[in-house]
Picture 1 (tube, rainbow, N blue to C red):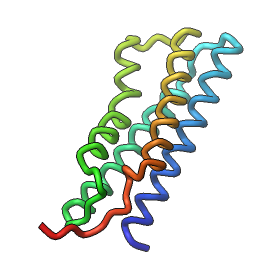
Picture 2 (cartoon, rainbow, N blue to C red; picture 1 turned 180 degrees about the vertical axis):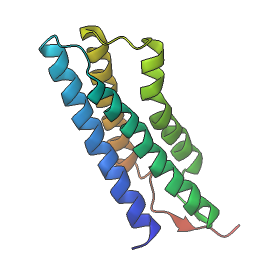
Picture 3 (cartoon, rainbow, N blue to C red; picture 1 turned 180 degrees about the horizontal axis):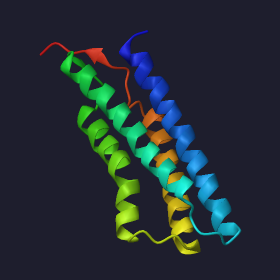
Picture 4 (spheres, one colour; picture 1 turned 135 degrees about the vertical axis):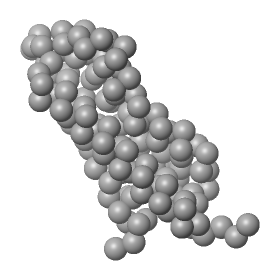
Length: 131
């Protein structure tokens, strides 16, 4: 299995995980439940998964492979790695209904952004570019 395939699998998992986080946060908000520690662990896992996708992209770049729009790829991936912990920091660890709504909106936004990256071929195909 080559790194292009691994990157694609991890990115698809990232999209599905974003959707799952959004549904989970929306259900907590609808039931007016506080955000649980399990959810915070899932947010950390989300960031680690996005970091893993980015790491595979860095490895492929170091091997001489490039997507068509490499700068846009790295900007989007840095956003996806940093934004969930960033929202946690901005909300100062709040766990009320409004925080759950904010996390649900952000998770659905990240999923739609990721799908958009895939549709616009920002993710690849990664190919060797002769300089």
